[in-house]
Length: 249
Ligand code: 13P
Image (cartoon, rainbow, N blue to C red; front, side, top):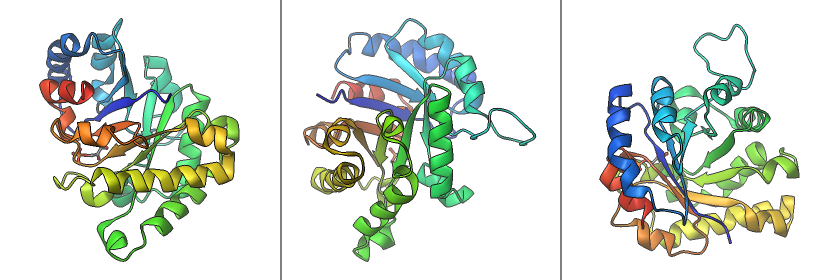
């Protein structure tokens, strides 16, 4: 019912030449994958090379961040308008590394998500608790606050167009994947929040991805959970063979 999304977040890795080499190897490996949407999110300078390489394929290209205005005196920022103009079709919003290192807060989530939609980009909005929050039994409190602050202010029409990524911070880049059970519980909690705010129909349609140390050898068990609608993959998306294996879980 919900089409899976397998998305790669390259973070601050690869040059345009590396990007070209990745796509040359990756494209034939996933050419017959119709069961899911495939998205790759390279760093800004690699977007043109990725978009060029992905033309005519089943691979969509997304950015890792955006600014909410269209243009202006905002040194160092990139707008949704610019991303749309070069052929991006999606964007990651409020990744935990943006929250942690660049102070992004829920108000940014709302502005960035709305800006993405205004420019035709599918926002993949990240939520997730830190290790101290999980150990303090505060996971649901944190997810609730992130939902209430960042997603509840959207209109139902806006909410219908977003993707949510549950990325527990303690599982990112640590090799500690959440068990399928832990991830599914969090997804269910988010979906119940969504149902209360936006109704059962929209809540049952929103795709919730899991992110955090997803690898070829654990993706199958994660994807076996009905609540898990795909993955947002960091490290294991950098290698064409490994990401292709994840796409073909
Ligand atoms: P890793 O897959 O490297 O743990 O990163 C997950 C992530 O942050 C994806 O956005």
